[in-house]
View 1 (tube, rainbow, N blue to C red):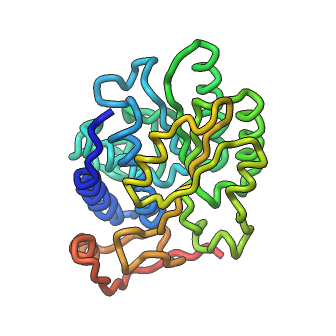
View 2 (spheres, rainbow, N blue to C red):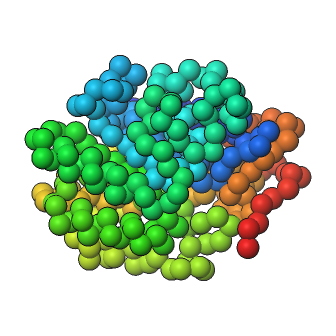
View 3 (cartoon, helix red, strand yellow):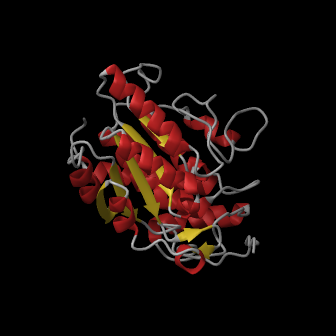
Length: 285
C-alpha cells in the first residue's frame, strides 16, 4: 500500500474529472454518475487494491468489479492517470477503432468483467470471492454498485449468498448519489434506511462521505469490518461532483456537450464557477 497523501489523491481525481469532461462530447457519456464515483475509484486503485500495470493477469491480484458500468469514464480516467491505460486511447471514446465506449469491455486490460446490465456483477464478485476463500487466497474483491441499481432484486439475493458463505473478503461499495437516471431515488423507490437494510442481510456496514479521502482511508484500513461478514460501504456522494453547473441536476445525468462547453467546463473544474450550458438535456420519463 502506498503512503497516504491526500493532496496527491485530489490532484489525481481532478485529472480524472478532466478526462470525463473530455469524453462528454461527440456522442457523450454518463457524466454525472461518473463524476460522483471518481474519488472512490481513485482511492481504491491508488491506496487499497493490489492492482497495477504489472499484475493485471496475476491470480494473486485484487479485483474490482464496476457493476454500475456506466461510470466507466471514471474508471478509464483512473487507469490513464495510474499508468494502466495509455492516455491517448481516451481520445478514441466511441470510435470503432477501439473498445473505449459507454460500458466496460474486457478487451481493455484491467477490466475484469463486462457490465452495463445493472444488478449482475454482485453475483460475479461473490463467485470470485468464494473461489478465493476456497483456495485459501488473501485477495480482496470490491464491487461498486449504484444506489438506483439496488432496485434490482439480484443485488439482495447476492447479499443473502454472501452472508451465507461468510465472505468477509468481499466489499460492496454503494455510490449513494441519490439519483437514478433523471429521477431521485427517494422519489421513485425509496432506499432508506439503507444501512439498516444491509445490516439485516448480515453485512458489516460503514457509511461515509465518499468524497473525503481521509474518511475513505480510515474506512478501508478497517477491512475486514467484522470477521465472517460481508463488508458494505455506503459512500454518500454528489452526482456531477466538481461541476457546479450540473451538480445534482436530474436532467444532466447523460451529457453530450459541444466543443465550446467542454472548454468552459474544464475551466469550471478549477474555478468552481458555474457556466451557462446550452446543449440539450436528456429526459427518459
